[in-house]
Image (cartoon, rainbow, N blue to C red; front, side):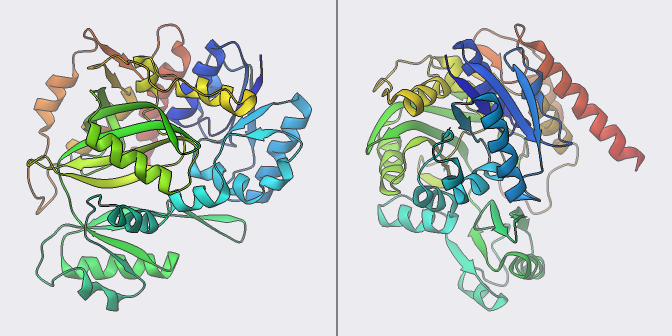
Length: 401
């Protein structure tokens, strides 16, 4: 069996990968930024925990620390999970040559998938519906994308989730502007910090996701899901989602998008579906995503196949009949969802918005047939319980300050 180093131990995806690799019999180490709560390090499948220099504050020191650990523990494969670690490792991937393999796509494909504006342009070119989007480099670009009097809200989104400058990360953000004055301020702030920003029309609807394993331009292991609840009801990662049958049209569009990027590995594409059934592209993730525990629970173990492909060149099955209507929840995400609902419906919010008490009643049932959890496993309790405790402790500290 192989020796695997999973990075970004604070993330939900890292916990899912750690459990998958451990159950497959691999020796697993879990790394995380120093000082960050990392639930995956508490898993029974984590053989050793490793804290490295904060990757977003000292990228070069982070890479050197990781490679030092790899040499000391004869690690066969590094699996970076978030943009926090993918960026530095991709930029310095030559340092790992002959030392260890890294589960990540080519530098060119990773840069393409990370660039939200290039993704929008490619999607338009191949006929995928996208929100009306303008790349704003100054306030002067705003008249192209927004009338003074509406419609609002408007999405103000960074072109990259993370940019790198002088060995440090410049974090991206997503926010909403509800007035022309607020839009100008938000755009000016982001242009000053990042140089440019995307301004998009707001699209509402049900969230759908598609994932697959792309190798040599061919898609393996297609999987589809629907969002049930989002951590932030205005738009964010899901706190609960369920597996659904594959939609041939959605699958075809998604595969073409991933293929055109020259991407290889596991990837996911997300959409919003309007009431008329039309799908609009929201984003693509060319890395392990937070809800990867759902396909694993349904029978498609992406991490296991990723490890086999990286180390042995073994192709995954073309298709696996996965279980449909499986609901997967994340307890801390559900708690944050309720916390966000307490703030009430945002002013001038278009369409419907979840009700706190209705949501609380719906979410109060802890288990039903076909329901599982990302974080809380009876066979691996420590990460989930510690994560819930950390959630409450963080909020109590915030109230005291």
